[in-house]
Each structure stands twice: as structure tokens, then as C-alpha cells.
Image (cartoon, rainbow, N blue to C red; front, side, top):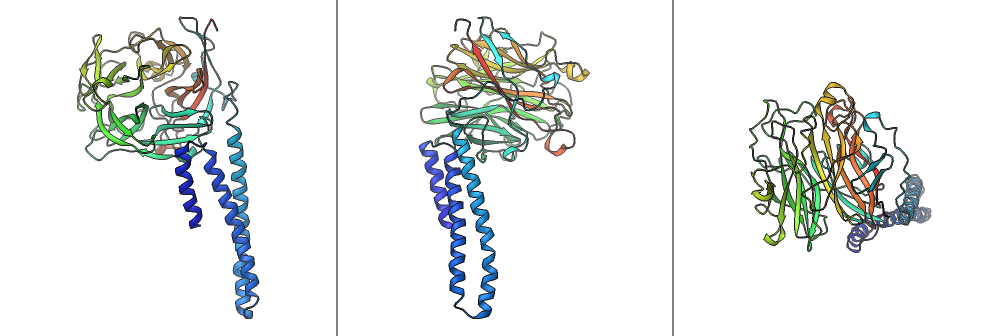
Length: 475
């Protein structure tokens, strides 16, 4: 047992260092289980043979005790054989490209249906596959995820690694692909100490790399001294953006502090019972030059519905640490990241006092454009039980990360967390590594939203996805 433990520790380090597929460690564990089971059975047989030379009473006692080892050894061998088969099945997935013909996990409700056909302004056609569960509620022991979308660290054939906020913590997940995230989650970030800006939650939403350092941007939540957000079932929160960095390929992270904060203090509220305040619901990426990092966020501390804003860090001025960020205001990045003013770059307030949340950008090499998915919330719809004619997940494109095109609706559905209501939220586009024209549109979903402590009311959000493809007219 001690030798097996030591072998697994060494194998785990080598698999990570050499970038071996996720099923490698499973295969090693399977062989160790089969070997240990065989050793138990053979050892007990040798011991019984030696016991025949002993006195009658010890022989009878020894025979009874050793009979326990045979079924135990058989169970170890069966378990190991099952793992071998599972590892072979995982390995077989490597050579199979993701299929656009997905099986529907459940019939989508009318309020979460995709738009049949989407044609962008440059005549690029956007198609969506059927909804499929990627991580169901309580899969891998996780609940309430993704809280702020997903942050992909590595995505290549046969191996994917990503950070995902579940509840109030962030976990590292690994697998063959997004449909097979089968490694045990690794906790990498959690809430800070009482009195800190992230005392209630730390949910990573983006990871970018500069040199040998990975930077993770996370939605930080301060939950102290605020009224309860009764619609969601959670306590009140004041959001801001924090930074963590890693020098070991994303396996361990060190917090570096708060980088973007709302102009208004935690005490400010549009109404006395406003539970959600500050700036959050973010997304981020590095531009194609690799010289600038961008973070998109929504200001919740406003009397109007929050819209999507942006802040930028220029690496020519130093790493993306606190003090090196500027908010976009009146046509330029001039306002400080901590407490500065902002001008929205995506504003849907004029279309019926709607809110724009979770702006998640990505770059499509095949299109030569940035694409952003985001959520639109029309409160009058879910409040009045009306169909989500405006609410849902939208898409827009850009050449420069500042000017964005007309918004195109991808999926209709309520996007506000309201106990007992259906929800689609936290969208992210994760392009295939070898095909920048297609990938996954992932998002949080629940047919009847609830939280962990109110399990009889419904289901906390869990991660689903649809294959998304961009087809140029001249291709």
C-alpha cells in the first residue's frame, strides 16, 4: 500500500510535467489495484500453507481470518479491471473530434430555446447544436456552477484544463474534453479573511498568460454588512475584481489583490434593500498582440440597469497588478481601476430598461474578429411571468475590443437568478484548439433555480453547453 501511494505521487507529478492525457493516471491506479488484489490473494494462500504446519487451534483461526482476504482481493481486481476499461474508453475519445450532432440532455423548455438561424452583418452564419449537460448538479461533488463562466488554461486534443467557480470557491478541472471532465476537482482559490474585499467568494472568470506567468482574474465578493438578496436566496454582496498568479502552469495560485473596484462605496444603494452591489459579472482576455489585458464588467451600483464596461492594462507599463489598470471613460482609458468612472461600451438600457451582464469575449482566428457573448435581463418579463422576448444570451463581434456590432440573440431565457424560475446565465465561448471556427457555448442552466440549502425548491445552476459554429459566406 505504501509503495502504491508513492508510485501514484510520482506518476501524478510526471503526468502533469509531461502533459500526458488524463487517462494515464487512471490506468496506473488500475494496474496497482489489480496487482495489490493479486498480492493479497497469493499472500493469503502462502500463509495458509504455512499455517498447516502449526497446531490445530492456530490453524483453524488462521484459516478463518485468511478467508476474508480472498473476497477482498477479488474486489480489488474487479475494481482495477473496471478502471482499465474506463481508461481505455477515455483514451479512445482522443482520436474522435467533437461531434456537432449532440444528443439533447432534456427537452428544452420554451423559455430556453435557441434561435433557429443567425446571420451576422458580414453574412457569417452562426449555428447552435442541441443543449447537452457538461457537468450536472453534484457531478464531481460540485454545486452552483459556473458562478462566473469558465476560464480555460489548456485545450488541445485529448486534454483540457480549466478553472471554474462553484459556490464561493474556484476549482481546477481536468479531462479529455469539455464533455469528459473526469479528474477530481482541485481547490485553488477560496474566500479571504473577514474584513477583506473577497471575504465571501473568489470565482475565477478568465486566465491569461504572459511569459511564464499565468494570471487569473476573479470575481471577489464582500458579504459583510449587506441586506439579503432575497431573489437569489443568498446574502447581500459587494462585488469587485481580484487578481491571482501562478508560476506552475495553473496548479497553485497566489492572490495579488484587488485591481478593479466600483466608483461608489459598499454603503451606496439604489434602494434600501438592494442586495447586489459593486462591479462584477465579468469576462476577460488578452488582445492578439499580447500587450494588453482587457476585463469587461457590469456596474450593479446604479439606479439604472447595469451595462457592460471595460478596463485595460498595458503590459508596457508593467504586469496587471493593482494600480496598473485604467477604466474606459468618454472614449479613452483614463480613469483608475480602483474607484474610477466608466462609460458603457454595450448599453441595452434603451431597449426597455434592460441590463447587460456577463460580457465574455474570445478571439476567432478564422473570422479575424473578437466575439463576445453576454446576458440580457429584462426584469419586467420574469416579474410578470411573460415569455423572455428580450431576456437571453446574445452575441456581438468587434475588431478592436471597443466598438461592438449589433447584438444577435442566441438563446431565449430568463437570465436573472430568481428562486423557482428557469435560468440561463454565465455564457462562455470556448473555441476548439485546432478549429477557431467552432467550439462550445457553455452556460449555467437550471429548469427551476434554487440554492443548495433549498434543495426541495429546485436545482442550483449546473453547466451545460451547445456546439457553436461560425461559417463565413465565402467558405
